[in-house]
Image (cartoon, rainbow, N blue to C red; front, side, top):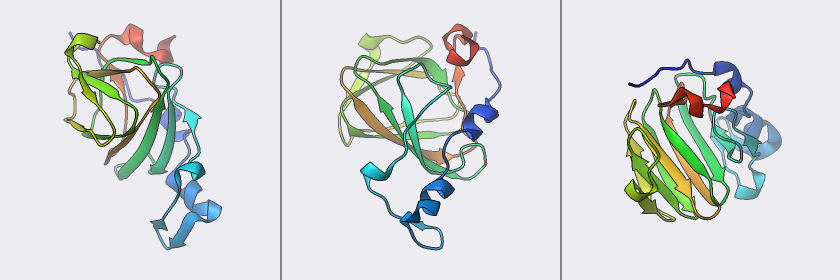
Length: 159
C-alpha cells in the first residue's frame, strides 16, 4: 500500500533558486542565464538521504513553473523507492545512475544509465536508484516538486 506524505514546501523553499544564480551576474539579458558547472551552488537536500546535493538552476521548485536542477550523488548512494507529483525527466551528466521502477529498491532490477542516458518517470510512478561512483544527473520538470517515499520509514525528514 502506497503511503502519501505531504510535500515539504518549507524544505523546498530553503533551496537556492534560479533568481539567486541570475543575481550573481550570470544573467546576460532579462531571464537569460548562462553558467558553468563551477558556478553552481550545491546544497544538501532535506528530502533525500544524506549525501545527495542539489544545485537549482531554474525554479523555484515549489511553484507551478519550469524547474531545472542538478543532483550530485556520492559513490555507493542508495535512493529508496519514491515518487513525485509531477513528471521527472532525468539526464545523466556524469557517472552511472542505476535506475529501476517499483516499490522497493532492488539493484538487480535497475538499468545502468551512463553519461548521456535519459529517463522519464510519469507522476506517481515509484522508482529507485543507486550509484557505484560519484554521479551527477540533471532533472527538469514543471513544479511544484516533491518527494513521497513508498515506505514512510525511508523518508529522512521523519528521522
